[in-house]
Image (cartoon, rainbow, N blue to C red; front, side, top):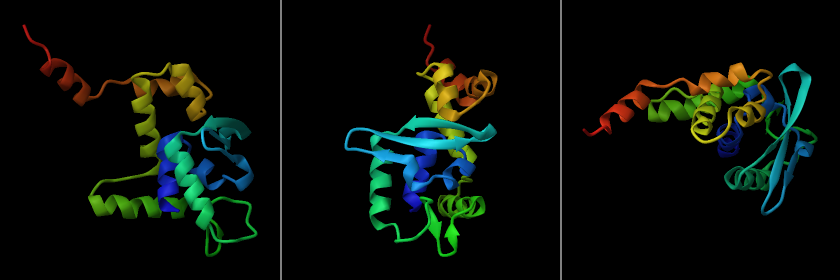
Length: 155
C-alpha cells in the first residue's frame, strides 16, 4: 500500500486530500494505459493519465487490497485512510533516510521535474491549478541550477 501511495503522489502530483479521496471506480487500468479521476480543490474533477510505474503499483496493491465494503482505494483497520495517516507513513520513510518527506514535497518534485520539458499550461492541468501563476512557482531557478549552469562554462 505504501509503495502505491508514493508512486501515486510523485507520479501524478495529486494533493494528499485527492489521494485519500480516490475511490476504486475512479481508476481505469489496462496494460498500456491508465487514468485516474481526481476530485480536486474547488469541487472540480480532472482526469490524469497514469504512467506504467503508477499503473503497476496500483495493480499490485489492488490485488492484495483487503476485501472491504469501502469504495475508497486506501483503507486501514478503521476504514478509509485520512490525511494524517498518509503524512505519518511518509514521515516514517523519510526518517529512515534522514530526509523530510511530505505529500506536498512529492507534488513539488514532480512539478519541478516537468517544468524543464513540459509547457506550463500542461503542468497546470496535471496539478489542477486554477491559475497558471500558481504553476509558475516551479519555474523559479534554484541555487543548484545556477551553480550547474556556471560550472559548465568554459572560455
